[in-house]
Image 1 (tube, rainbow over the protein chains, first blue to last red):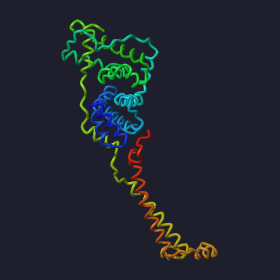
Image 2 (image 1 turned 90 degrees about the vertical axis):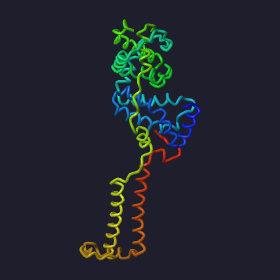
Image 3 (image 1 turned 180 degrees about the vertical axis):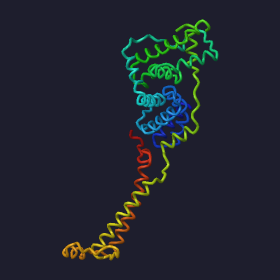
Length: 185
Length: 132
């Protein structure tokens, strides 16, 4: 869906057009559900949370400002619902807040060789599933949803430094968990 | 993060597979946003009780004033004659009875209407849908 079409649908939905909102649910449902699933780790709970997020989005839509990015706003609603259901998630992020900020480059600039076979892929995905909730949230927002660090800070309501520290530590944990692959890769 | 392992991790993170949406996710979500009204027990019980209350009051008033002679009830002998005299002066007639019956019917319809309105989503109640 292009930007202009999405803006038009949002305006129509703000006027109470449920068909327009349904189109937005169609468009963003998959990502909202997967974000919820990564954090909740339970399909039924994730489905309920994703539906609740859309319900809240519908109710709050008249207050949505056109200059904001719709996905960021939507993911913020999902994240707030995750905070409500997993109280330790916010606590974990707050703990990161007190740690030293790290200098983090853009991993997408990485020029290393990325050889990935099925077994490695499975192990890495399992390692992601075993990360702490806060790290999984940050990593998911960064990689699954493709948000910038600033956008993740906006979605989670955390300072930029906390986001960078969290993502750095999450990657370091993954690296440690997958050290055995180092020689193979 | 320049090592091959780190590049591998970054690649794996980027192609983390998306789980498919549960079947009926979109219709179920829309159903939560605009639920269809379904008649429930309370929607019928409340108007019924309201109507019974009005009709009981009506019958009681008629019985007290002597307008109704309800066979299986004793005559209102326990009241003082002055009170009964005052009641008998009340302008109870068929017009009043019909008015009260229509009132009872209106209360029934009104109760169902309020139940329907309350069951609607916020968005359908006002143009500025959405007050969180």
